[in-house]
Amino acid sequence: MIHEEHPISRADISTITGLTPSSVTRLTKELLDEGYIKEIGTIGKSTPGRRRVLLDLKKEAFLSLVFDVGVNITTYGIGYFDGEVEMRGNFYTPKDPVEFFMKIKEIYLRTRDELNVARISLSIPGMVDMKENKILLAPNLGWEDVSIPELLDVDVPVLADNEANLSMLAEKYHSEDMKNVQEAVFIIIREGVGTGLLIDGKIYRGPSFTAGEAGHMTVNLYSDRFCHCSNKGCWELFSSINWAIEQYGDGLEGKNAIEKFQALKLRGNARRVMERFAENIAVGIVNLVNILNPEIVILGGEVQDLGESFYKVIEEEVKKRALKAATKKLKIRPTTFRTISSNLVGAAVLAIEDIIENVR
Ligand SMILES: [Zn+2]
Image (cartoon, rainbow, N blue to C red; front, top):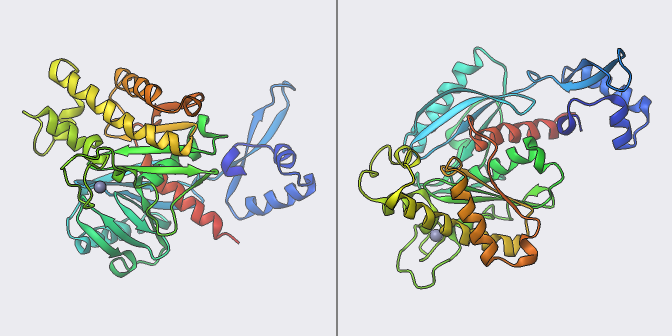
């Protein structure tokens, strides 16, 4: 509860949980003694001059080393117990998983000299079996059936999850408008397209951890374009950043294509490509909205900064195509995470959840 509502008073904890004030006092004393939380003082508004004691998380209580594994560049940082992340650096993602995890270990050992890291947490652009701790498939990296424990031998637990799931987790943890939302979808658009599904207030991963692979729903029955998943006409073929770059053509190929794409002034051909791109994204959102009836659809990845007009096209197209009743309360917005990516923050939240589950 302190994680969800911090800072919070003992009286409020008692009201919300129904625990007696003496139980709350006893339990919070334990948490204080063990260094998970701290007391902070504020001046009460209703009773001027009177100091009200609030409980807040001690952000240094647990630290995690978090990685956003990108197809080209991996960024990393330190995750704190209050869900904040401090950026530390980045490196080119080695294509060989053995080499990649050697690099992770090297960074961990260096960080451990300086900080007490309790978890390593990885955001993966692909499917992750969280029970076996295995990367099932990260198509744009060419990684398949990569067992993390086999390649990363360290003295702290290592966690990993799909980047869209982690983005959803970060939004659920930090965003004001997600507080009472039980159903939501996070769509991450990068070289591929992934979705994180929040159902009944929890991330839905499915029994074999492939839920949310909405990028592979068929949106064009007659397309002869093959997807790496061996299907034809998948949504991600028309809504990933690769589609937009390919359509725009001249001058956007090569290494920094994504950066160049984001810097485009929306005129002429670029504007038309952008509008079609928005429409293509909208078609997938329509399918998701009709199936899941989410309250909020959040977009992240390379499209989060494309601006209001881009989102307006998406909204209009969704309104036009989706079931009327499903869109009545629907909100579509870019992610609130700007300087630090949603999935990196999500990796920190995943570590926090794991730590809390294992506290005794
Ligand atoms: Zn596919």
